Length: 121
Length: 106
Image (cartoon, rainbow over all chains, first blue to last red):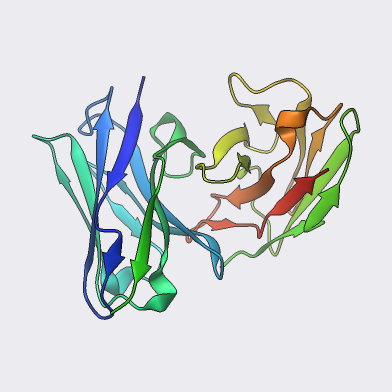
């Protein structure tokens, strides 16, 4: 059974960089899966950030692309999100998730529990 | 970006009622429309994918229909655990987008 768990700082200062990690259990991230990051805030609702194949392309929300980096650590079976120049508008619950059936266009059938990120000095 | 508009935004109902939630897309999403349920403090859970395919383990009182720009989620005979917020999502084209949510409450 595949499980995802996000981790990272709960508090980030304005203009700093957010780094979040998604730890995957039950499935190697090097498999033919497609992973994603989504965030949820009261102001923006649910917002898709990025989707990527470990062995293929990365697809970004163009509104965030210039600030987003995704990477993977296969030795730890984790993948990560970096979001630069954080502002109050980026405060949200951040989720990692898996696309169903290994397709970017698949629904997200497995989600982490989410991690709350606050932006404040 | 494809905009998804859900209606109603909130809905009051009782146990045993049948309810429907609508999701309208600003342009066609073919059948790439999915439904999620979210309870307070929890991540969304997938109910229905591709418009009408019930996710494994989801009760059969949930059903979905539609294609193109108009979609509906129906819940027959509401149960206490169904009171939650429901979201639609399109994965037809990036950026994938979500509806604003429908809060189903007693």
